Length: 400
Image 1 (cartoon, rainbow, N blue to C red):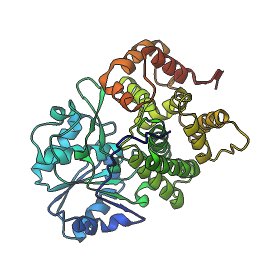
Image 2 (image 1 turned 120 degrees about the horizontal axis):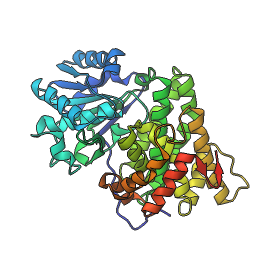
Image 3 (image 1 turned 45 degrees about the horizontal axis):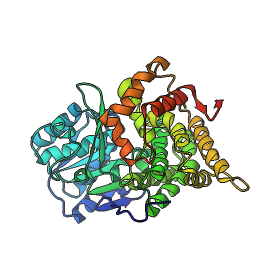
Image 4 (image 1 turned 30 degrees about the horizontal axis):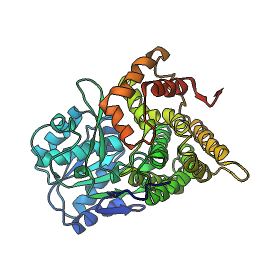
């Protein structure tokens, strides 16, 4: 049952533009918002080499904008990468920032936009997860379908000095505009399509298990799950299928909107732990964690999981609520396997590391922060169990 008596807050960009080839009119959409001056595009080498940064730059110049491109973003970004982008934006005299790429590039762009108008470096603010006020305008243009960061007030940034994943969680970095053009995702390689797609699935499912879930976020999350179940395998193995890309772009955006207020729970806690220790890519970490996090929440989220099973395309007629909930867990695991992602973290780490990982999951403030959104308390013993099952690939009493 959702928290009927709680006050909930919804954060979404001021403007969302979604459509095939919409990026070719990005300058027009920005002008409509009253934003002017020089655009700083923050992206990564892969997006630049694919010609996508040039496409955006030309669209901006067509409408009279000056443009400079920072193309040195990197996966799983740290505070140093953000500082480099911010310094480039400052030297170029930028007025606003366009984060162009996957979640990493957009997250760098979010931080660079703040530092374009605020003094100091990323680490000065990252320690408190927030900025004192909003910086320069930020436009988010995703080239992957996964993080949904184009519609969220979060940015995942690693501390370069110790490799621990931190994050910003503040409305000041919510994009002023999200422009989602599915044609920009067609060039995504299969592995990136798969891992980013499961990241989106994790957002949608974990949102529904969070304690602040509500009718609006449930509705958005369920539709996102339905689209992912239908479209992700097609997008992975038939990358130029535009209908699949459109559905995945919608799903990623919707899942991002869904978790903006309720948050995400134990699956992401486990994924951030694996990412911090073994540098497992974020989407892969989420995939490894998701079925086990669903099972971990079975006792108090059974009805929600049964609804998720239907959204995943499972025929639950004649099943009990528990059977339907279990069907959801196994359907998610099967979907992850179908798109070629591991369902255990055994390929990345050692079983003997579990005590150390459990300590991190139970004690590190950058991990325990996720439990503020969780319904079930996390203990060290529970962390050991979750880590052991996800290492062994064990759901229920069976090894898979």
